[in-house]
Length: 408
Image (cartoon, rainbow, N blue to C red; front, top):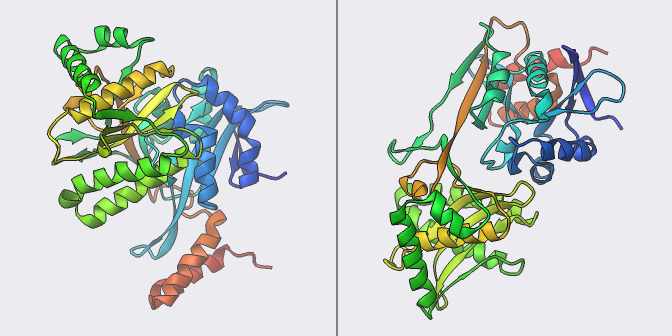
């Protein structure tokens, strides 16, 4: 079965490109073995989640896979990528742009899957191979700010590239989305209360939880296979009612579609829990969580609440329940994901720093800006330019394509 359309031999390694569904399926066993041993790659770099995303986006992704040279060697490192073709109006040419593969969906984190023992050498070889491929820009968002990123960026520390680090501030600049608070969870809930939160927070959590348990009309449900459609509808209806006025209906609707996509994808893997707080038959609030039972990691994705209800303390009760549920289900990390909102730290969160990186290839590079492997995508864009009466652009687009076609 042919699945590697490119191989680069560098520094004792072979780097293959896999960009067919059959080829990606063929990586499953090795990928999962590497992923299991890699403490730095989580749910959004798992083979199962990427398989759902890649299958829904044919011809828009590829994987760079690294293995040591030598007979019988297997892959030790993977870098999933999203591929795009852009028409540059100013330069009148097609350019290939690359992103982290998880950005085909709404991956909370991106990066590499790598055996720790091979990390330094394999990522250096990976960067070398990426540099020999034709592209104009490479964007890696939501990647941990760690040694792996440093190793990869070191391969582009020349005047052939411009490396930029971007900020991502929201809520009028008060929240940094590149700070991701998370809570390491102990084995039992009482230990969590004693070791992770302040005495004031501990008292509040206990008081509100006692009030909740004593209220005959309050209850919290968790998602089942049968209730998922109901639960996600409740969650996102509550979220939309809260945010549509400030964000605008169109922007809020787009966000809802993204939440539906990522939660549907994870639900297909049995990895979603949506706890809902009810008063009788009225939903007061809900959380959307993705649960990675293999890596024992819970990701808090989205919350919705009825803003007309002042009490009980909806957010506190739902996160208290969710943390209890996580501990009872063997989860070791409660991840609040993007944004350093103050309330997250009241639950005992500590920070993980991530980065948003772009690498631009400069005119000093002798490697092309467009990958001929993407000529079909370019042809489709050229036809759209022609259909839209951008005749000058279409003419130059077809000229560029013509230079890439076989002469015989």
